[in-house]
Image (cartoon, rainbow, N blue to C red; front, side, top):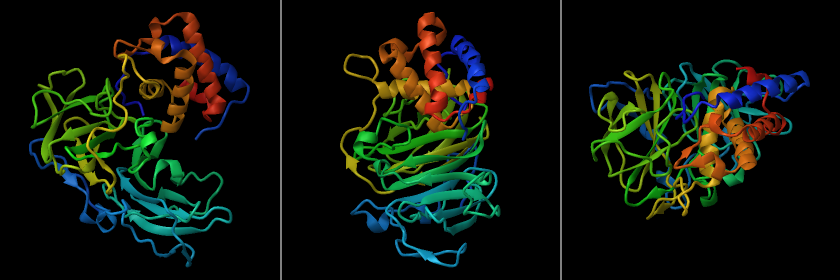
Length: 410
């Protein structure tokens, strides 16, 4: 989570929070919570494409479904079967160890083994948990998928919310602070959710092939990377964000390409994209398609895994957050996304906690104060009273966002 496009180091804010956090901690505080990609920086074909079986949607293109099996599934865990619900999940494993995947019921918990030992670099098939059930990923061979308390062997457990859409891809990766984690991506989110959160993927465009490049698993690139393609001169900017370079963390920049292409990576300070850091990587996408490009490794040995998204709505113009408003400023969601990156640089927390905390700060201070001349301001330069407002928002986040106050010490 510390791999961000860092705009400014808020040392004054950190000092305020460290001070207040010691008080919060003393008072008790809150709670905490296939195919392998191939790297070859000397060859254009260094990107690995997920197996054909993961390119879901061919059977249900008319209704936009993921095309998974909707019949009752046999359970290797209980010996029984269950009725699948309406929301489908699949996992992309960028951990360096295999994992087991289950679906579970709620109430009297029953668990059903879906995939045993999903290998590193592999992409699983779509599966629909029972209605109101959960999608669970555990360490391979850890057992006890019905655990409800102190489930340290769980990597992630996800419950479907209707406002997030019916199709989810879950990226499994190693977070610098919390270890093995799951990052949920919504492939068919409702239009009103697109642009309000980095989890929601923008709609397909008839005039371009969209590559959503996610670098949460890239190490040793804390200040981000830039991207260039063989289709244009110089660096290429995302079409769904402004003032955000390709970084790790919870950014999901989308690039509009003219079909199949190759792309390369450059240092964040190389504004001309003239000194190669890694690549080129082949991108295989058709007009009207959307494709995840999951990056992992370190500069000089980065691997890229392509995973096509499911069929969804295709629009003629870009959809979602463009990073600005009509008066040249920024909308709230843009500033919240930038602030989420900033606060997670300094404190250990999940993506959801970072977003929750960022909302409290932005709503407490205001976008017109935090976002000036196309960038998030240097928080050290803000008056003391504004830093105090930010400190108050961070203390409030301990209970509102469920953050352990001891995280302020990290």
